[in-house]
Amino acid sequence: MSTFRLRVLSDPAEVAVATPALARVYRVAFAGAGEGDDEVRRFVDEQLPRHAERDGFRLVVVEDGDEAVALGYGYTGERGQWSSDWVAGLAPARLVETWVGGHFELVELAVDPARQREGLGARVHDLLLEGLPHERALLTTYREDGPAPRLYQQLGWQPLADLTETTTLYGLDLRPRR
Ligand SMILES: CC(C)(COP(=O)(O)OP(=O)(O)OC[C@H]1O[C@@H](n2cnc3c(N)ncnc32)[C@H](O)[C@@H]1OP(=O)(O)O)[C@@H](O)C(=O)NCCC(=O)NCCS
Image 1 (cartoon, rainbow, N blue to C red):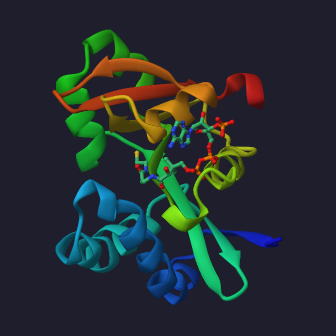
Image 2 (image 1 turned 180 degrees about the vertical axis):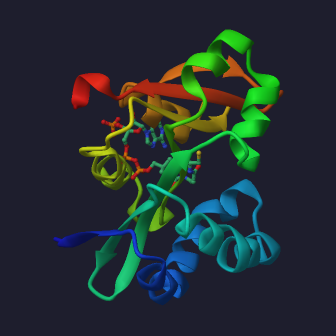
């Protein structure tokens, strides 16, 4: 039976060291969604280093021996960031007023397909949100039914608005957990 180690990283230098292992998880987890070399390169060279510098950044990595097998991360979402402004431009105004800005933005959750359905996604999620000072959390995921929307709904997230034909905004009220 495998013994997993969960680590929380919040220092950009630590994230940089872990990036090759994180890139492997990202690659295998999103290959099924059609992501390839270009997307992995963007994740490694642009997305992750930029996000690691943001306030409230927190990344959870699951290691099985020397190998990373799951990851999740987020940061404090604020207006002026591309993703928050994108959501604010598409969601109803009353939702934006309540939810967008000062929230925890859950950006990625990914589990190596060889280790899916073992509860790792839920464990990463729970540790990522544990003790957060934010009142609310937001994420966007697939509008179509599938593993990710099912996981989020099972863990208490509520669909707030369909943003595009393929993307739904989900929210989680963190106040009862504090
Ligand atoms: C979504 C993902 C992170 C789930 O990780 P996981 O470790 O397999 O999830 P868990 O084992 O913790 O499952 C937790 C719950 O999620 C739901 N779920 C997860 N995978 C599911 C699947 N294939 N079918 C149906 N429900 C599923 C179930 O409700 C499950 O609870 P249960 O096992 O008690 O039924 C994983 O499938 C993944 O990495 N997918 C590709 C990347 C991705 O889409 N990320 C999310 C982008 S927003």
